[in-house]
Length: 80
Image (cartoon, rainbow, N blue to C red):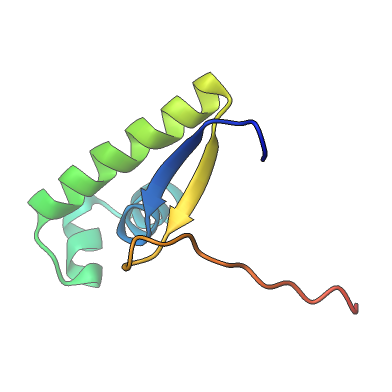
């Protein structure tokens, strides 16, 4: 990903786009699952969709951020 522009996406944004766009929940159902209002889901969904669209159209890397505003570190086991 060196040389690519980066777009930070928060864990809450990832979760809400997964629930609404991947699992097919409506915003009210996603809000109930997450324990937040439908308005919060709507705001997070708009933000996450904008970031994903920007990354796809601009060739940027999406950087998954945790609650402390630091990148997620994914550990893989290559033994298999």
